[in-house]
Image 1 (cartoon, rainbow over the protein chains, first blue to last red):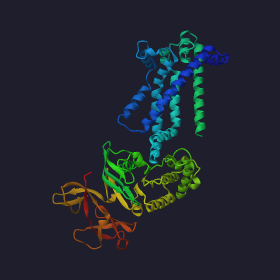
Image 2: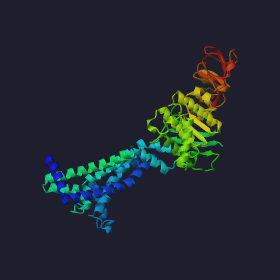
Image 3: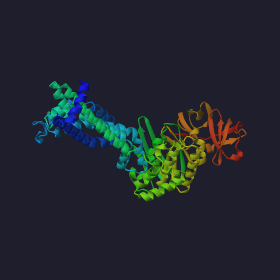
Image 4: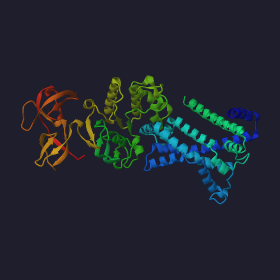
Length: 229
Length: 317
């Protein structure tokens, strides 16, 4: 079945199947958008958390590490509750739109980016931050220097968040509704095709998903190596 | 232009650093000695404005009262025991602090090349900083600090990573810093070296600073009759409450004689070494006491001598 799936995957891509390309587009759009937003918030927060000491710091890190394991279905349910017609943000009418999926995926990616950025900067950037301070640098300059030193770890944090987001199905299904051409992602399409008994198409979609993840990882790591050569 | 610490207190778990008063003066090189965990690095980080104290004040005369830690960090710098260099070339590392201070790239480059010359590292300017040996990296870190032209430079174990050539360069730099009126304080373990290169030695024990060599701090028992016993050896009398006490003996106030004197402790010279303009004797009188004497009257190792010591009581640890 797997070998048939690999063959089917390439045939689906080569044939320009509109359902596959639409699901690929939604998956990429939602995952990239969510990862960027989670990165913009999580990387500075994780970096600051790593270089500054304050009471309760250990507790914050423990909570973040715990949130990395939060079930995607739970996030989907919470966001559903908030965005549904009767929910506090129901007036925004975001439910069953890609925007609602982005909200849920940001909540999923944020603890991952923050906790892993914290770990990366703590191990590779803390001494550098202190060294920059001894040379008269302010907090912002120190943070930038620490980030530069920990860039590989921080990039890995972003890629880990992207991987979790692009591969999750629970939250996307609950808040997106799996609407064809609008909120159907590769993962929700796989769920649907599996339910319909189209196993080889489901496997093919899964392989397409893996190829996307491989392409994004390769692209970003190549960029990192080029910049830091 | 002095650096003054008053009423500094910092708690880290069970450890408390307590420095009621400490002052550095221009051109002075002060050594902080003491065992590992005594608080030397914590004190240096507080002096450098890296670590806020729980209580107390650090004043640099050049700065207005109530200045921020950031303002202090612009006038005081600290070199860590393990040199931390940034990714990039040696030159960009030395230029970093200058660029932070707003100097142009060209000015920074000129100044950085000049200080790299002072630590004999100019030919390494374009090398990757992370590819240097530990000694070379420490010299780059020294150049990076020198480039800032700050009022006070603090070193945490500066000799730890240096080879013999680098030690000589460091000693020359220390002399230049003293000549130009910079304040220098450093945490060091090599006491013999300290006598040759520092004007003042302080000892940290259990978070407290004592103005003496770490070799002459003792714990003992003060009896009700005023007699002081150190390791069971009666060394004299002391005023105050009886019980367990901590005392110091100023090495320069130890009187060494070859003939018996009333109340003197008899012992044998274990070693005699140069300590700046003086000779440092280690004498075994049942406990090891360090004495600093003029070289022309210094006894030789193995000689029997008599010591008269003056003990000063230190605050309880």
